[in-house]
Amino acid sequence: MKRMEIHTVPNRVGSGWVNMMDGEVVSRHNRKDTAMARGRTLARRDHAEHVIHNKDGRIGESNSYGHDPFPPKG
Image 1: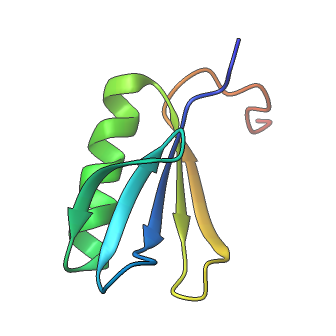
Image 2: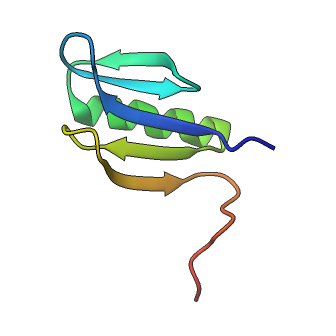
């Protein structure tokens, strides 16, 4: 089964931020905080991983809202 992921990334074309799923843009936002909020909502709805990138494109944070194959111990 394919792992679902929502990526919040800087928009490569123009300015702002986008949320992407399977290489497709699913939402566009002017600010990172609004893009993150929408990405979190989508990830919860789809029981997916929400991967938040920094302005330079590197992964800054990741949250799992579905079945986590590596849950924290304790």
